[in-house]
Image (cartoon, rainbow, N blue to C red; front, side, top):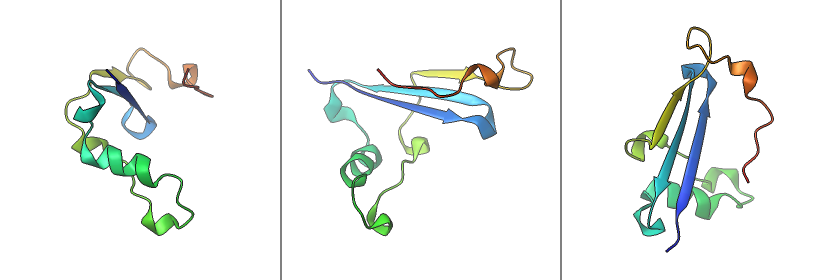
Length: 80
Protein backbone atom coordinates (compact mmCIF):
# COMPACT_ATOMS: atom_id res chain seq x y z
CA UNK A 1 0.00 0.00 0.00
CA UNK A 2 1.45 3.33 -1.09
CA UNK A 3 1.34 6.29 1.28
CA UNK A 4 1.73 9.99 0.43
CA UNK A 5 3.04 12.64 2.81
CA UNK A 6 2.67 16.40 2.41
CA UNK A 7 4.36 19.09 4.50
CA UNK A 8 3.63 22.81 4.63
CA UNK A 9 6.01 25.39 6.09
CA UNK A 10 3.97 28.56 6.65
CA UNK A 11 6.18 31.18 8.37
CA UNK A 12 3.62 33.96 7.79
CA UNK A 13 1.12 32.11 10.02
CA UNK A 14 3.80 30.70 12.34
CA UNK A 15 3.03 27.08 11.57
CA UNK A 16 4.23 23.83 10.10
CA UNK A 17 1.63 21.25 9.09
CA UNK A 18 1.79 17.73 7.76
CA UNK A 19 -0.70 15.38 6.12
CA UNK A 20 -0.63 11.63 5.57
CA UNK A 21 -2.76 10.13 2.83
CA UNK A 22 -3.03 6.39 3.25
CA UNK A 23 -3.65 4.76 0.92
CA UNK A 24 -2.31 7.18 -1.67
CA UNK A 25 -5.66 6.94 -3.47
CA UNK A 26 -7.07 9.13 -0.67
CA UNK A 27 -5.00 12.13 -1.82
CA UNK A 28 -7.12 15.20 -2.50
CA UNK A 29 -7.62 16.14 -6.17
CA UNK A 30 -5.73 19.42 -5.75
CA UNK A 31 -2.60 17.62 -4.54
CA UNK A 32 -2.81 15.08 -7.38
CA UNK A 33 -3.10 17.89 -9.94
CA UNK A 34 -0.25 19.81 -8.29
CA UNK A 35 2.05 16.79 -8.58
CA UNK A 36 0.92 15.99 -12.13
CA UNK A 37 1.60 19.52 -13.39
CA UNK A 38 4.74 20.37 -11.39
CA UNK A 39 7.14 19.67 -14.27
CA UNK A 40 5.32 21.64 -16.94
CA UNK A 41 7.38 24.37 -18.60
CA UNK A 42 4.27 26.51 -19.05
CA UNK A 43 3.85 27.90 -15.55
CA UNK A 44 0.32 29.04 -16.32
CA UNK A 45 -0.70 25.36 -16.57
CA UNK A 46 0.83 24.36 -13.24
CA UNK A 47 -1.69 23.80 -10.44
CA UNK A 48 -0.67 25.42 -7.17
CA UNK A 49 -1.04 23.49 -3.93
CA UNK A 50 -4.02 24.52 -1.80
CA UNK A 51 -3.53 22.97 1.66
CA UNK A 52 -6.87 24.39 2.79
CA UNK A 53 -8.54 21.86 0.48
CA UNK A 54 -6.65 18.86 1.88
CA UNK A 55 -8.64 18.39 5.07
CA UNK A 56 -7.45 18.38 8.65
CA UNK A 57 -3.66 18.06 8.95
CA UNK A 58 -2.20 15.03 10.68
CA UNK A 59 0.03 17.37 12.69
CA UNK A 60 0.14 21.12 13.29
CA UNK A 61 3.14 22.71 14.94
CA UNK A 62 3.20 26.33 16.08
CA UNK A 63 6.55 27.90 15.17
CA UNK A 64 7.77 31.46 15.51
CA UNK A 65 7.53 34.42 17.81
CA UNK A 66 5.48 33.76 20.94
CA UNK A 67 5.16 30.00 20.37
CA UNK A 68 8.12 28.76 22.40
CA UNK A 69 9.68 27.32 19.24
CA UNK A 70 11.85 29.81 17.41
CA UNK A 71 11.52 29.85 13.62
CA UNK A 72 15.30 30.17 13.26
CA UNK A 73 15.57 26.50 14.26
CA UNK A 74 14.15 25.62 10.86
CA UNK A 75 16.05 26.48 7.70
CA UNK A 76 17.50 24.52 4.81
CA UNK A 77 14.99 21.70 5.41
CA UNK A 78 15.30 18.49 3.40
CA UNK A 79 12.95 15.56 2.95
CA UNK A 80 14.44 12.12 3.33
